[in-house]
Amino acid sequence: MKTAIIYWSGTGNTEAMAKAIERGLKEGGTDTAVFEVDKTNAGIAEQYDKFAFGCPSMGSEVLEEDSFEPFFAAVEGKLSGKKVALFGSYGWGDGEWMRDWQARTSKTGAVLFEQGLTQQEAPDEALCAEFGKRFAAF
Ligand SMILES: Cc1cc2nc3c(=O)[nH]c(=O)nc-3n(C[C@H](O)[C@H](O)[C@H](O)COP(=O)(O)O)c2cc1C
Image 1 (cartoon, rainbow, N blue to C red):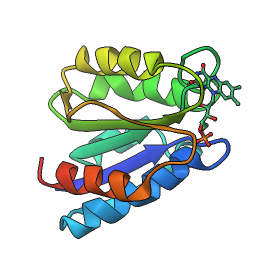
Image 2 (cartoon, helix red, strand yellow; image 1 turned 90 degrees about the vertical axis):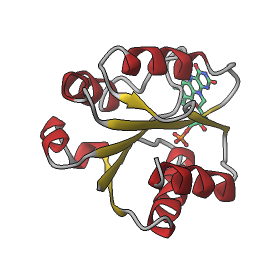
Image 3 (cartoon, rainbow, N blue to C red; image 1 turned 180 degrees about the vertical axis):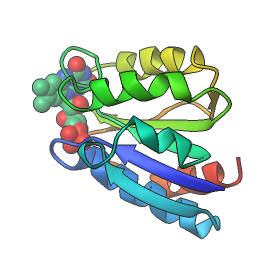
Image 4 (cartoon, helix red, strand yellow; image 1 turned 30 degrees about the vertical axis):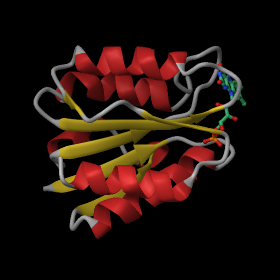
């Protein structure tokens, strides 16, 4: 199964999560490609079987609104039956953006992997890699 990791990151924390998750997926034997969200589009849904989406908590407990939200709005209708993992960094909140994002993703018919992985500011990269490795086996 081919896996795509698609993320937005303003200050690099979610990007560091994406790269560590990529490492874990590859250690788990998965063919994995990583895309910054502006370098792809919703057509990617037809090209991969599994997706890990990453976006920090922005605005007030929402997905980043200029790039990631429009991308996710365009892709979410194509995720039914696909295996999906969510991840992202946050600052001062309680993870509300991730809870909302999980509920939204579940409604698409996607097969959600675990709970979305949240990390406060700079991530624990070893923990992110373990998440990727478990997702490889999912
Ligand atoms: C404009 C803006 C809005 C933010 N809003 C929230 C928020 O609502 N809740 C929260 O927990 N953190 C919020 N943060 C903090 C970021 O989620 C946090 O710094 C995160 O590590 C950024 O990830 P990144 O380095 O991948 O961009 C906000 C940061 C910015 C710049």
